[in-house]
Length: 119
Image (tube, one colour):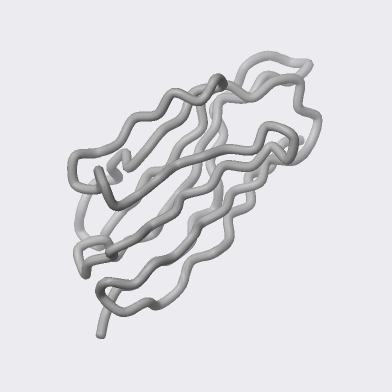
């Protein structure tokens, strides 16, 4: 059984920063791509940032220059450093990862963490 557990969400003022973490646990053989999506009320879920197993990154245009994705392969954890936050960044943030276990390669999602940017 594999789980992704997110932490670090909360309420922050515009211009502030937050750091999200997502730790994978369980019977993991290998973790390939990891990333973050977000879903705002009334909107579709959208990709925010992704990172490959060797550290190549990709960002949505709306967060380039403000957000940084990174990972710790020893801790099986992916991070999202969010700076210069804006009210339009308010959403539930979900991490995801492609993980190989003894039964095969699967796509896992975390439970989501709320980020609210408001004064």
